[in-house]
Length: 111
Image (cartoon, rainbow, N blue to C red; front, side):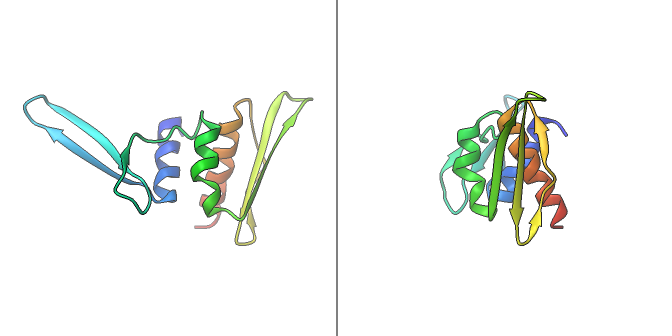
């Protein structure tokens, strides 16, 4: 899954609402996102590269999560848990992406 698709999946899971405006004269279609329980519109948070965005929005829907650095592999490892379901431990050189993939694994496991 590409990072943009993962960002959108996490945003929708978190409660963001996607909309779009089509400008016929310019031939443009512009996406916008409404924050959860809000009328604030914003760009899609870049969860896969911005750990601050992850911490701001994603922990609210998980019971617990963890991140650690494995010096032997030089990768970050992340996991998440909700309702007695624990994700696989996900490894990646990008700490935010590791956390996002762990949460995605949790989302998929809870379906």
